Image 1 (tube, rainbow, N blue to C red):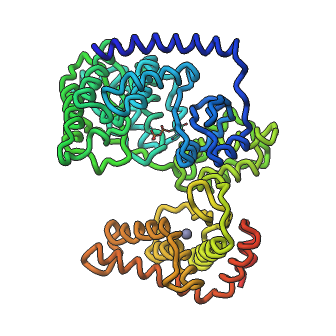
Image 2: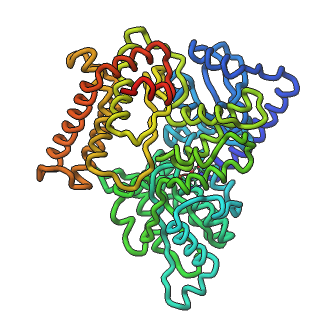
Image 3: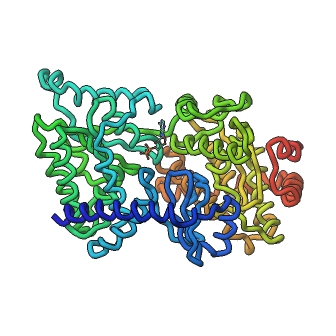
Amino acid sequence: MKEQRVKKAAAFILIGAALCLGLFRTWGDAPQELSYEEFWEMAERGEIRSAAIGDGDAWRVVTKDGFAAVTPNPRALDGKERLLKLGIEVTEEGTALPAALLLAVALLGAALLFRGRSGAPGLQKYAAVDAEKAVPQVTFADVITSPETLRSMQDLVGFLRTPGDYERLGARRPKGVMLYGPPGTGKTLLARALAGEAKAPFFAMSGADFVQVYVGVGASRVRELFKKARKAGGGVIFIDEIDAIGKKRDNGNDEREQTLNALLTEMSGFTGADQIMVVAATNRVDTLDAALLREGRFDRRIEVGLPDAEQRLGILKVHARKKPLEAGVSLEDLAKQTAMFSGAQLEALLNEAAIRAARRGAGRIGPGDVEAAFCAVAVGDESPRRLSDEEKRVTAWHEAGHAVVTRYLLPGSRMARLTVIPSSRGAAGYLMSIQPDRLLHSRKELIAMIAQALGGRAAEEALLGKENVTTGAAGDLKRAKEIAAAMAEDWDMGESGDAKRSAKIIFEEGFAAARQCLAEHRGQLARLADRLQEKETLREQEIMEILEP
Ligand code: ADP
Ligand code: ZN
């Protein structure tokens, strides 16, 4: 009931806000426009109080002195993170009614405070449930995925569209489908396309929305969601981030447990007449409660993996449909260079490239735009922070260490860029290396990959001695440990019966290989580090020239 009232109030505030805004628009001055550079300079100086970000063309920001302004939306993946790191209040707004919605959401957030601290973000997503009631316009032609995944999804269309055909033959209709795989691989898109293909309405909600609120609210939201779907005569109910409610039962989180039970109860109550299919998505199927995966629940599991080179080309083509490219841009090459990229990252890459082209006033996207976008998506934009001379020297040795090991131990890899310009994601510098896209890796190659990751730390040791190595290698160490652990546990490549010990031994083997490689090529290491310190960024050709024996 409260829900109903709140919704009415929301509609009211929304209209009110829209009106006020309309008035302000006509009476007041138009908000000041800040260029991209101006805005980030002010942000760095701590002069921005808040920013309302969304999918629209502009962000609306308020300065510490209370002036409202707009600035172009950089559409960078890490835009929000950057703002938060600078201590700026961030609100997210939708696309439909951006300005009015922002106010409404802010006010509603306050109204809902008594129900839980994070009312606002949950509510914003919740609002999307109504907006999406219609049949999505998306089809399988918009999603590029493996033939197996596509076939499994097509099967489901049949169940939704002509259930009779299956029931007549005694086939049990799947109630719950679990899509699992890394983030950004198109699970949400697949679920929407399923509804689109079946001409069924789509209802979406995120598991994270359920657990942010007080006990009992999550369960009632689940029931309401199913009620809505039944009222609409069926459809696809999509639950993103199901792991937020479906984690293995831990020390008893009441809210999560109640929500999960409500979901399972709803699912077991389906009758033949309910043309409802529940599709859930998760990045971590391993953490899910077994109760969720049991027969008659989410018993259809469909893997949605990272795209291979051919699929990457397909995804790039889909997202390049409305983007004019210069003849020099080869999507074929780009597909080869983007191993390990998700569909969302590929989409972001093309979008970034388009923004860069627009910024320089070009009519088409050029190879330079694509390259800069590649770096921005892979490692983040350049950070305005500058390194001190000493930091730069250490970073140059560190990065040169990675490069030397890559050159001699992984000769099949290409090195696109080596830099000591800090990135906005906190790296002091980086080597961008492109590994050949391969399905299988030999033990020797994996050891070389550990050595590559540890090449930075090994170079710091060579320059500064063991006592003076820095924290700059934290990410490298983590990556090396992950490879070593996978080798020991998953691929049985260790010598000791104890996987933990094996992993440790493998890690040390990789580290030793890095140290030895740098000792053998000490002259090249020093030369590369010096040149890097001087020029800050080196391209493939320069790196290779310096490293020629
Ligand atoms: P997930 O749900 O797996 O995290 P999403 O479906 O939200 O991923 O993907 C985000 C966006 O990235 C999509 O809307 C689409 O633009 C793009 N994308 C991701 N995967 C694919 C794909 N396989 N084919 C086409 N576009 C994709
Ligand atoms: Zn490193």
